[in-house]
Every structure is written in structure tokens, then in C-alpha cells.
Length: 248
Image (cartoon, rainbow, N blue to C red):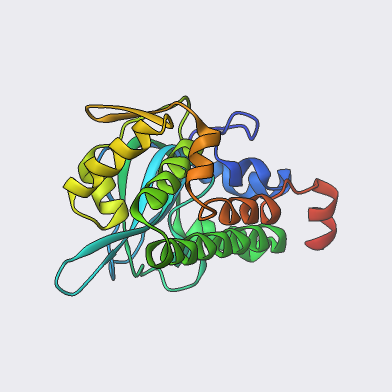
């Protein structure tokens, strides 16, 4: 059952960025849900019944091959949402989405979401701009995988996780990092030791603490930052007066 939520109380950046009138279209249909570790949010080819505006936790976007090989190409936290296929009119995702760090979300059914973007051009434009930011993130993941070494890519993923989690402790296992980087676990262990030796992180079992974020950014050698700046440029708080004028 949907429960009343205020725009000021939500943590999801999309919900906080949208015009008050647009949030009001979604508000009656938003339902709090828990995101449990390793639960699958979307399955390739399976119709999506709802979208989730992430409040906390991290959801991985995973490409699955015909032989069941997997590679993470992006992830979503409180800056985004699941259910992009709903917005694009297919309701059948191409990739798997699963929870890699447990948390919570505000869920909305596919039909109320589609009705809302049909009624509001500013809401539709905001969510389509968000889809563009995901495309940018995925493109830079491909760039990182083909042009940067493993410890640079690891530094990038750690920063991306840090952006989406409160505090400096990241509950990340070597198995998860292996999936993120598409490398063997032994390689992950080796690269974590490299970053530790450089004073950027401190690793313990099932946890990585960010010790020096500025050093970690430097160690990415430029493969972190462009998607994050693109998000800040494209997802900006909308003024209510602009929304009213656009939707007349």
C-alpha cells in the first residue's frame, strides 16, 4: 500500500529534483520497499511491473551473455531508478539488475508512472535525461575496461560506490569487485593491496574504507568524473513555475 511521503523527506535525487507538481503526480503511488542483498530487480526479457526510485543501497546493471557469463556495466544508487524500460515503452529490460548493497526504495507501478509522464512534459524530460546519464555511465565503463588498467578501474568503481553510500565504509566483497571489474578474484586481491599500499583505502573482510578520496581520484587517471559531471548538469532542480508553464 502506498503511504504518504513528502518531497523534502525523500533521499532519491530524481524525486528531490523534480518540480513539486511532478512529484505530486507520483506521490499517491509511491510505496516503500526493502532492497535485500542479491535480490533480482529486473530480469532480461521479463516484463517489469514497477520501477524503484532508490533511497539507499546499490543496484548493479549486469550484462548476461548467452552462456551466462556476466559483467557489471553500471550501477544505480539514490541518484537514480530502476525501470528504464518502462519509460522507453518496452517494459522488457535487456540487462539484469540486482542488489549488491542492501537498502530501500520507493516503488511505483508501471501504469501510474506511464500516466504521470504522459501528463507532464517536464517529468518525462527529467526521466529521459536520467536515461541519458545511465548511457554515459555505461559508455565510460566500456572506455575504462578497454583503455585503463585494473587498479585504475578499481579506483573508479570504489569512488562510484562511495558516491552512493553514506560514510566511508563500503560493504564490498572480493567476489562483487570481481564481477564489477570482470577479472579473477586473485587479481582483485592484488589490486586492493596496491591501493592500500598507496594509502587510498583500508581493506578488511567484506569492507573497504575510503581513506583518501582525493588520492583515489588521482589514481583513476581520468576514468572517473565525466559521467558524474554529466549527471549534475542534466539533473537539476526544476522550478515549479517552469513546470507549470511547460505543461500548459
